[in-house]
Structures are given as C-alpha cells and as structure tokens.
Image (tube, rainbow over all chains, first blue to last red; front, side, top):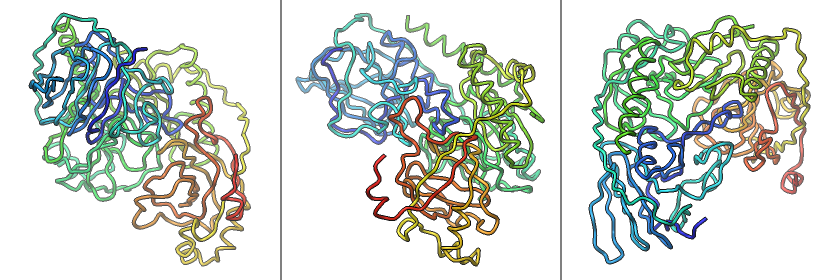
Length: 317
Length: 228
C-alpha cells in the first residue's frame, strides 16, 4: 500500500466507487449496484493498464475536484466528460477523455461535468485501496454497503491509491465513437398482456421523455399513460436491471443498477443487455423510442455489443 | 412445482409456480432456490448471478457473456428436486414498541377495521408468521398471514420516509423496514432489533425465507434501553 491519495476538495453530485457489481445477494434484498455504464467503466481501466474489473470512481453530472497527495500516478477518464487538470504551478490543461495522463503530486483533476450523458468514470493505474464487501467494491448507498461505508463521497474524504509509482509511460488514446441513437431495444415483459392493445401500440411506436426522476435506482418516463386492463399490481416478485415496470399512473419506470430487488408493478418489457449502458446514460429531458426484438435477436445484438467493446479494448494495447 | 418457465429479457429466467400466495407454494420456491444456490456455490453451473425467490416466482438472472436462457432453462428442467423435502423453520421473536410515536397508523387502522388499538394488537401479536421472502430493501422480510380482521390496504399516499425499524401491515402481510425508506404500509410499531446488519458479513439478515416470526410488545423504556 502506498501513501498516495486523492483529497476531495469538491465531492460532486453523486460520486461513488463502482465495479462490475455485487452478485448473489438479491435474495437478501441487496441489489447488484456496479457501474451504470459497464463499457465505459471497463475502458477506463484498460486505458491505465488495469484488469477490467478493478474498482473505479463513478461520478454523475457534476463530478469531483480531486487533489493528488503523496504520489505520481496514471489516470484516465471515460464518458462524455468536461474536465481540467490543474497543475501545482497553477497551469490549467483541458482534459481529453479516452486518454491516459500522468498526474504529479499536488496536481488536481477538476471534473466539471458530464455533457450529454449522466455518468463518467475515473481510473488510476493499479486501482484504489478499498475493502471488498460481499464480493464487490461497489458503493450501495441504499443499504450502506461497500466502499466508503456505503456512502457517496463528501468533501475532505480521501480516496487512497494502491500504487503510487508510475508504471506506464506509453501514452494511450482511443477514438471512442458512441453512435447512439434514441432507440432502446426491449423484449416483451412477463405482463405485456396486462396492457390494452392501444397501450401496447403506444409503447412501441411513440416517443417517451426521461423525467427528472432519474438516478442510479431507475429512470421514470413520461409522455403517454399506458392503460392497464388487468391489474395495476402484481404479487411482488424479483426484478432485474432493465425491467420496465408500469405503476398505476401509467408512466413506465426503467430499473437500473441500484433498483429495489423486488417490485409489485406489472412488467411491460425488459431492455436488452446490449442497451443497458445507453439507457443508464440518459439524462432528464431526452427522448427515447422502444423497439421490440426477439430473444434471439437480443442475443445476437449482445454479441455485436461485446465485439464492439473488445474492439475498443484492443485499441488500448 | 414450476408451472411455466419463460425469459425475462435476455439475461433472466422467470419461473412461475402459480398465482396464489400460500406457504405451500412458497416452500416449493424456496426449495428450488436452495437447490440452485447449492449448485452455484459448488460451481456446478456457470454464469448465474442472482436467484430471487418471491411468493410464487423464482427469477434467475445470469451473465449473458457466459450462458444463455436456453442453457439455464435446461438446467432448471433437469434439476433433481426432492418433492418431499422438509424445511427446518427457524423461530424468531421480535420485540416491538407500539406507543403512539411509533405506531403511526392506529387511527387509520381503527377506522378501517372498526377495532380498537388494543384489539388490533391482541389479534396481531397472537400469531406466528411465515417469512415468504426478503427484499425490496436489504433484509426486509415479507411475513404473513395476519388475522383477517386486521387487514387493511396500503396508505393512499405512501410516506416519503418510513423510519428504520418500523413494523408495517398491509393486506395479509406484515413487514419490518430495515432501513429508512419510502413506503405505504400501515405502521403499528417499531423494533429496536437490528433485522439487517451490514457489518455481519456471514449472516446479515436475521430473518430468512421460510423462517417463522412472532412479535411481542415492549415498553418505551425497554425500547430505549435495548441492548443486543
């Protein structure tokens, strides 16, 4: 362990530690957590030569202002993020995402904000010094489980860095083109037939807006009320990431990484695995259209998504 | 037994055990959960991330880069399930204080059930409950069934914050809010007992599906001086 750490001069809106999530705990009511955008999470690690599953700092909208103490490190930031590097001689450099940087002792990273997306990722070479709780470093602020005692970071907190000796000298930079459109692909849910024909048509043909009620738990949509003709409640049962529930008011809710483990609203659909990163990155005010795909199509799209991720990862070599 | 298996999205299997809520069906779900969990622990199946039992459903979520729905379905269909299993019910007694500052909804309950607070409590405390599932928030047990005469719907407008430790009832069920959380159940008291302990890594949840739970009343003084 080194003595290097980030001092948090400004915590940002929701800055937490995330990794690939905490599994095998749903049955106790502990949700999966983990980075909302798994591809960008992995890429941030790869850019600093880390194992892909190392824990990273996830931030939302306004990010943290961090000062490096007692070390010299490599770092990278991924996502659609506006940030600056403030050198200890007060020189300010504009930051570029998908590139690795050297940060010297007493330098600062000012993560000003994400741009058209919600989440960004910060990785350091060698990772952070954290404690694993139930197989994951992810912060779960609902159950106060995981890194930083299950709390988001506050001012003056410290994030310790495992390795303070610079290890990579090679500059890596990749061209990340997220050609994202507003089409979110879904498989019909187990309660699809609870909804009227009209509601089913609306669901797959009309545009929905992301409301302000969007966080790591889920995203509430508005635009069209989906009429339920059977029952607006079901006996509570398990949920998974991407489930789209429709409560009595008819407005769909998409479940994200910190979702409640069970729920009692009918499930109209489930977002396919390949589109979960994009759904999680949606910001309030943006609009989306749902498109139905079959299970087989979803599996093929996931293969393409994985190939695409690997293509970017290979570019880092 | 499982009546139907379908896919929930591309990374989960949805097992339907029926539509009613009963101890018998739920124990079937728990039996499947235990058998599958053991296979996962012993690394006999690959790619399963989570298994979520509920009243009458079991959801198995998996890593699509490791396995897929058809493989998981095949595993489920070929499970060696002992139909005559016995479940060793753990018995747990939970103290609750029902003073007015904790029992927030007795006026509403009395209004709906036409019973006094004392009558409601007598019927409520006089029964042992079965834990159907835990979840929604960490360690929250869903227990039942409560006496028919004290049943009541959810609040019309849910509370934004239900205090940690609150004991609630709705329909045939009763639960314990293990963390402060939004919620719409009728609150009748509060327990000083830690029903979920995130620092107890081996057994964080005091109550597990299949356990039996009863409640007994304590005074406010006992509540405040409670020492686990």
